[in-house]
Image (cartoon, rainbow, N blue to C red; front, top):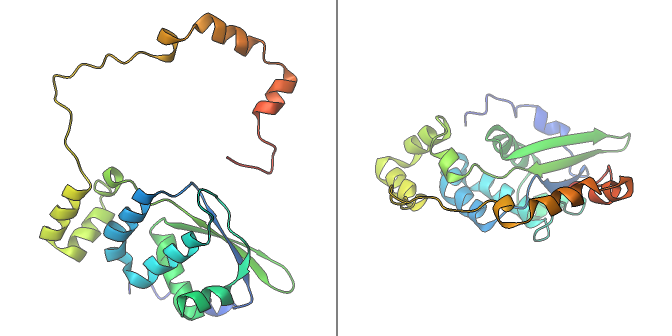
Length: 198
C-alpha cells in the first residue's frame, strides 16, 4: 500500500539470475535490530522487516560487505517471489534504510544493496514524519510505551562537567612535535588506499 503504483511493471526488470551483493554503510549493532523491530516494523510490515534482516544476515559480523549471490538465492531463503522482493525493497529505499546501485553487462545486472542504519531513537521520535506515521499505526498507548522504552532518566541539572580535555592530560608540546615530524611516507601509511574505506 502507498507505493504509488511503482511496482506495476518495473519489477519485471529484475531477474532471478541477476546478482547482488549486500553492503552496509556502517557496522550494524544490536540497538539497530531493536529499533527496526519495534519502531520500523509497524511502518513497513513483516515481509519488509524480513528482507532487511535477511540482507543483514548475509554480512559477516562486524563487516561491511557480503558475498555476491543471485536473486534466486534470496527468493529461496525468503520463500518469496521477485515482485514481492522488489516491492519490499522500494519500501526500504523510501524509508531511508536501503540504497540500491546497479551495473549492467550484456548477460545480467549486478546490484549492490547498501543497508543504511535506522535513525537513532532521539532522531526517530523527533522526525516529524516517521513518529507521526508510527503514532497512527500503533495508537496512543503503544506509542507512549515505545517512547518510554527508548528514553532514559536525564542527569540532575545541578551536575557540573569537570572532564579534562586531551591537551589537559597529555603533553601538547610532544603531540605537536610528533605531528610536525610526520613525513610523506608516514602520511601514506596513515591514509587508506583509494579502493578501500573504513
